[in-house]
Amino acid sequence: MTDIEGILVGHYTDINAVSGVTVVVCPKGAVAGVDVRGSAPGTRETDLMAPHNLVEKAQAVVLSGGSVFGLAAADGATRWLAEEGYGFPLDQGYVAPIVPAAVLYDLGRGAEFIPPISPDWGRLACEGAGDYPLATGSVGAGTGAFSGSIKGGLGTASLKLDSGITVAALAAVNSDGTVIDPSSGRPWEIAMEIDAEFGEQGKRAVKLPPKPPTGPIQNTTIGVIATDASLTKAQAQKVAQMAHDGIARAIRPAHTMFDGDTIFCLASGQKSLSESCGFFSVPQAQCLNELGHAAADCMSRAIIRAILTAESLAGMIAFCDLEDR
Image 1 (cartoon, rainbow, N blue to C red):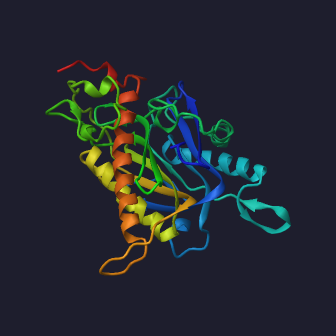
Image 2 (tube, rainbow, N blue to C red; image 1 turned 45 degrees about the horizontal axis):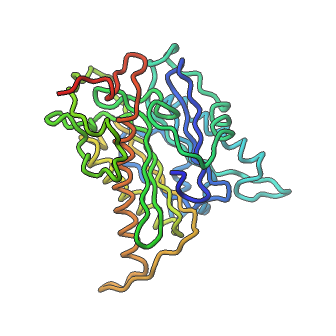
């Protein structure tokens, strides 16, 4: 994710609470879009991202554990951004930061049933945000994540297109469906690997434990696509829509009644989409197709990395600790 110029990422992780927050910060703002496919989402400011609505840019996206209580973290991120002077301009020199957010369900996995998430968690994640290599696995919003029958987590992946545009994905995987094919013991989309990015864990085939009984609405995969391309809000929304294909390929089943699957897209705007000609003469259409396809592929890879780099925690066994087939 931090391969995108102008994009910073920070985590706040509370191991005792088995929960956390991840923020994607774009201090100069980024054109934002969103697409929600799950039937049990927990979100903030998603209506504002619609192409027909006023504000074009967001200054951050917050991904958090804590279910509905986790939305409080976005308040801390908003306050921090306002103090730094980043946001939609208001009168008398004030700004209103635009901070959409999405949450996942990790209640009952830590010392307290409801993690003590507060605005401070969002603020601390922002204070620690940078463009350095990103920690993955059982960190930030992926700390208390559980996927199928094993430990979930947080992952990221990126790709530079032939056009010179870079696209990246960040995913917090807490899915009802599984990332691992039960018949092979390997990730469904393992063939998407680039440059041995999945490491030694990516070479393994494992025995999956049985899926535990769960109550309704205890799942969700949430994520962010970022790119250095210059997009309109409608184009950013389209990229977010296409990126959901990456969830559907990497997690089976996906977009269920018990998931709140949500993907945001942030476009920092350094590089223009090339014009393209075709039967319909739609400007930039082919380049947008390529960008959306790459976003889906990056999302699949980020989801796999989330699972392969997660560590066992709070009774949730991670892929790395499963028996080989």
